[in-house]
Length: 93
Image 1 (tube, helix red, strand yellow):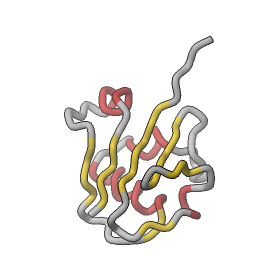
Image 2 (tube, rainbow, N blue to C red):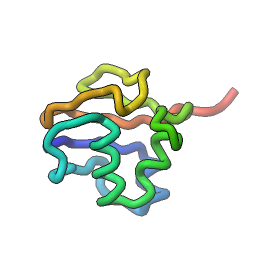
Image 3 (cartoon, rainbow, N blue to C red):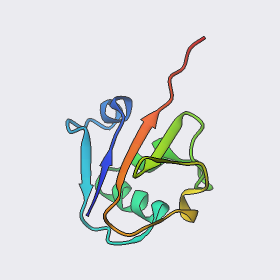
């Protein structure tokens, strides 16, 4: 089972009360597959995090076991025990 920690803005937009969710349906595969499972449980989660081609949105940072994902989600393989953290970049000037 994988735990995904979600940013406050995403929780607000998707009306979630918990700071993290456990994706029990996911055993192993790509980060893209994990987020597809998450989107089935929480509709709207996937478009918040990635573009139609699977690329990480510019305002989103994703960390897998404390390492930042800079590649396409489908190129990152998971084994079912990782800790995923989704962080929304701060805007301002």
